[in-house]
Image 1 (cartoon, helix red, strand yellow):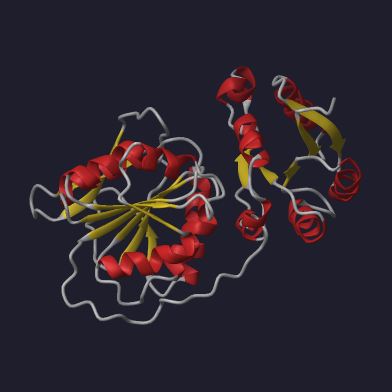
Image 2 (image 1 turned 120 degrees about the vertical axis):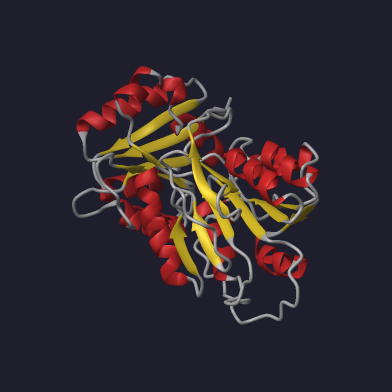
Length: 345
């Protein structure tokens, strides 16, 4: 009988890391490690021969690195690719690799991860990757359509909040790059990502967008027409400044059940309390259920709630959870979300 296990190939130039990752993969009976390569060229050849369901590759390798692996495989034999990021480095090329079709990236396991394998996200990522529609991962240049000024007479809403996880960087880029250059209200984005990558992600968005994109800072007043990215140092909140009464950013040490630093639920709940019904909440592609509770709070306060549809989601987990819980008012394809947001204003 054919194996029902998820067949994987691992590519890493470090013998130590190959052993660590192999042990983690082999701890799950539903995943089979069918090949191990010590460089990108060998890994590509092995992938072509073994035809695995998922490839896990280091980003930083001599000669044939992770970027080379992604470009080669996505051009010849498209399949889900998970990138391994070095703990002590921030490689901006990871975002290029994601744009060219990689499924997701994850930090290499540290001592804590090796001690608590069940808490390390690689196994969950492998399972999600194996279920992903490969057509969503192929490199696409989505045209900018809505960057030109629009006529906003009186905006009905005062703020837009967006939450995303797995598959999110590309989806967030698309939404931000298709918002008009005279957007009259602020946008706050929570993207699940290690903190050290968020500054690079923010800089990338700022270079691409006609709007100002910046990391949110504690105590900073929220300005119209600016796009803020939640940092990963703590959970970001919005509340009224006790002196001026204007909305500002704060951090909280409170922990949430689904995800932390940054938590989508944390931001969404605080925005619902601060802006009441004058808020648009958007849940994009991602694993898990983060944002479901917060989106419901926005809806309960009279705000408008949107979830990305299954067809355009790399992982439908978060949008599905929000929809099935009743927190979503409208399900929208990614390509239509920017225009739909504009129509709401």
